[in-house]
Length: 362
Image 1 (cartoon, rainbow, N blue to C red):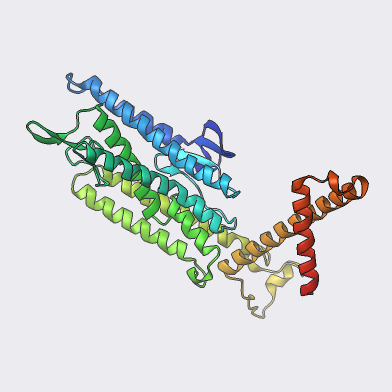
Image 2 (cartoon, rainbow, N blue to C red; image 1 turned 90 degrees about the vertical axis):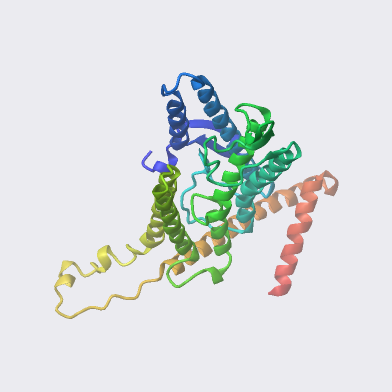
């Protein structure tokens, strides 16, 4: 429980093999929204306001479930390792990781926003077919009831009646639209676009600078942008400005944590604070100035660790294939070729061809 990113007390089991939990931020968000709606105000319509809030919160949970199911299904289909999911109001509160990223991870990260975007477009088309107008502004309707679509009434266009069918579909599409925008347009953790950028930078060196990857610069730009827009919204007396500022600070905290993860690997390579104690403490008393050897950049250390992980995985795979090959050959010798299953036969052909190609290349 030392890492706030893992404060997820409620488990929802495994979705396509991916562990899913509910983060404390989502729990507090739901409780605060419901309590705010339940505060006594005008007596007329008060209970309806509570029902509205409970309804769109339920729609948000449904949108989050569909969004994360798309990630989990894509990871299962591509046989790709997927991080544990910690649900928060904008998807998965994923933290920084030095694990290698591939093109499969890019597709997994893209699956969530793509699914939410498809739902958004389908909802907007459906509302248009019945004469309603979808809410495309990420800040919602300025007059309240943020996700309610505009419908044509006898007295002119007005917001859809709360809890009506257009209202429910409009809110569901609007919440999916918010998930799509946040996870597709903010190229920083904890959003999906940040994971997509890391998947690209994990396989494309052109996205890297000397000591910092492009991901860090994008994240810091996002921090500045979100804070500036939040301040502008606050100046306009819009409470959503505080949300944008909080998102910007969260992005900055995560990028600082990722920077420390990249840097800390080299701090102890040459002893504490860079001193060499192999000659005892008297080495500190030498009058001659000692020049510290140049230290590998954070990016080079990261690439070296990534190459080592790849090498270890390749060796483990080769050892497993050799053991499997020995078992099949023993079965072949003992029972004959007819006893082999289709999977064993394909494995034997595939590995034998690989060994022949390796022998020819050497």
